[in-house]
Image 1 (cartoon, rainbow, N blue to C red):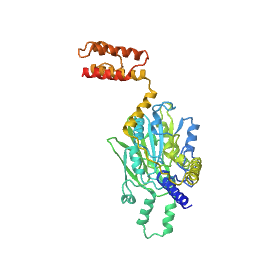
Image 2 (image 1 turned 120 degrees about the vertical axis):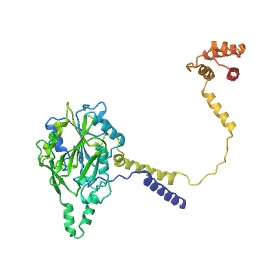
Image 3 (image 1 turned 90 degrees about the vertical axis):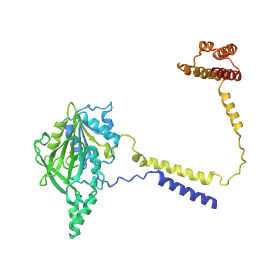
Image 4 (image 1 turned 180 degrees about the vertical axis):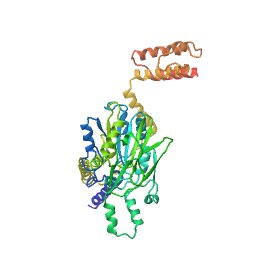
Length: 438
């Protein structure tokens, strides 16, 4: 009984160690804020914009694959004149290969619209500290904070939690209730045109709402390409919309993520801005593409979805149960001592030879010996190694005895006709001839 209890304890420990080291621990999505998806009907989704575009008979598509899919055959996309709308921060990061494929797609004559939660912080974007770096890699723009709170922060961090802590440090004498109220109040701002541009035609005020504190940013290009600032925050003059040409296409970056969401698209001139964006970007039956893939909705294999599937958990449960039954009930617990019967090298070689001899006929073995022999000569002569005989060349060699050559021809005819040959004699004869030809 003691042995079985010890075995049970060790089995439980091995199972726990395997779970900790190898199995992913997927987090539950219950209670999470809705993501900005084309199918989402909540406040942060794009279903209103999707239906509006469909009503206007504008081709729309939800991208649920990596960016390389934009150029693959079999899709209904035109090669140029399309508009891709992606909202950041992404739930699924963009890989380096994808970023290169996206750059090539834009340069061929397409438009990339990046809606980045820089000047607004929706609930679904809370706590992402890599947003600024990710937006910079995708848009080739370098962002620097220009407000006092962000000036004291480490570069590349844009977490709303850090913004809240900085705000509390700046006002240590304010009542806690006032700080909490300020944190929970929705921040509202307006984006106005900066100069004349077709994208801002008829646009007077784009309404922005942020559930959490946000910052202001200054963008500079990472390369020699110019960047145009076509929109700014009313009252402060801080840029909020940037346009950068890339090849025959363009990248349009918004410092806000929610102006085209279900909640905001009907506010101010938000819908007019989206209309201008589509009219200015689409060409030759191009499509408007919503990037759902990088918000976690994908058609390809998703490891997180696999490990969160309850069928997998039930299967693993049965496997573990049967394993415990085997360990505790079927497997003998006492070790039986066996005599060690080592096999020497000579015996191992003999057994291997008998095995190959039982599966390979003499004619086939002879054919392979001839093929290797003739290929070695053809390789020396610079001929193709197809195993064909070189009788004329052998006959012209003074070092080759005529008797051995005659016997070699006879053995070759027997092998060619599928008859048995003396493999030992054949191997000896080939070795002799190779020695003469050296």
